[in-house]
Image (tube, rainbow, N blue to C red; front, side):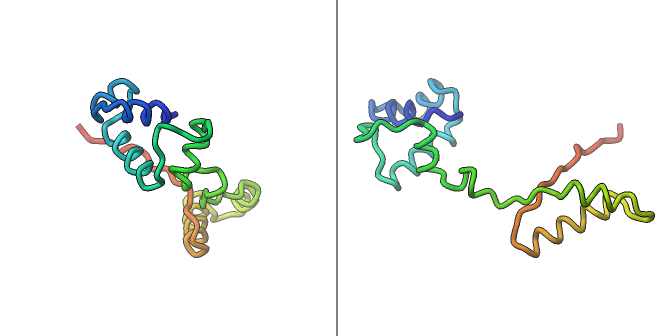
Length: 119
């Protein structure tokens, strides 16, 4: 997990983004993004209320909270029942699932197998 409090503390002490990234073991892009979002929300190191990193994450990254996940899990019972029928393949059910998700403006879970290279 990203240590938001430490990033803001080090930034308040005047350290560069490279130094903060090195100290916290995060990339410069992560540090830059956290500082940009903190500035947009007017969050500085001197917190009025003692906030945890989880609370800071909810404030800085609302899209990462549990309730904002727009992904719909595949219905495993339906898949199992459909696979028992002749002519139904997992690939066919997967395409059906993806089309259904996109029609409902949801993001389907997906897996991209690694590309195998022929030597």
